[in-house]
Amino acid sequence: MDRRISARNFSSRFFQGILCLLAIGVCLGCVSTTALFDPKPAGTPAFRDLPKEAAKTSLPVYYLEPPDIITVEAIQLVPKAPYILRVFDRIELDVIGTPDEEPIFGIFAIEPGGLIQLGGAYGSVKVDGVSLEEAERVIYRHLVQSPDNPRGRLSARNTVVSARLRQMSEIQQIADNHLISPDGYITLGSYGRVYVNGLSIQECREAIEFHLSKSLEHPQVAVDVFAYNSKEYYVIFQSSAMGEQVVAFPYTGNETVLKAIANMNGLAPNCSKRIWVARPVGNSHKPVILPVDWVAITAYAAPQTNYQLLPGDRVFVVEDRYLAADGVLARFFAPIERIFGFSLLGATTATRLSGNVLRGGGQQGWGY
Image (spheres, rainbow, N blue to C red):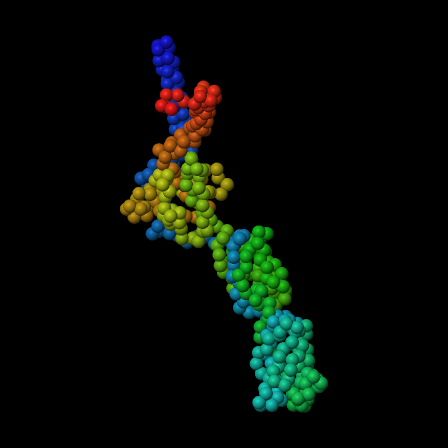
């Protein structure tokens, strides 16, 4: 009987050992596959002609794409005649013939409702919706003929009104930061929309000036990029247990491998020092792989593999093999442990509820 039990135990342990070996082999195979490939071992010669730390290069012309934000500055925005005054426009008035103690001279804003306040006893007059010439006539009639202005009525012979436009309300809609929408347009308020997707800064300025020339006389604007949102690079931390961590950073033109890892607050605990930069090349199926010597960059300040990143680059950090194997083993044995735990719990519960407990006798031999 003892021989049968020992033989049975030996066979079960042998079977368990075989299962463990198979599990370890599967895990190591998974680790080897999740590691993708090692393009070049650390310490290999760097690419000489590529820009890197202490030897950076200027990037090609930047082309606008959604969701970049551009800044438009108004240099010269003169409306075509006849210009119709609007609320919040600012006009400069110079009225000849007023008393010295109550002159009408200066810049006046058109308030909501279309009124400008002339001050003193002159009251207010409505000027929105008319041209500058018509506004001069309206103000003249108000000062010399209006019954609403009895005390401030001036002499019709000596009164001369001149008005000039000092600021258009629509300038605030043009001179501002503009987000490029997903369809590639920016909005210039009441002047409509302009398509700028895929244009350079110079081409964008010309497109805006051409669009504004339909309403303005020889418009001139300055354009610059306020936020570079359309170009990104990626830092990828490999992890077979928790999934790969991918973080995108906006590209500004001065990033290196060291700065990219610094933006991630350093390497994660499960990361190894095997790093490379994968750079997409047009429609090619073979990206450029740039190996990184992390120890040389950090410990010895060697800039040879601290490459300057370009838009779309992927900084890939391989996880540690031993930690990867531990994670794969944990994922493999976790369901088995739950099954065995549930089986053990069921067996223990059935044992405690069987025998004397079910018959109401309880446990015997405890001195009760």
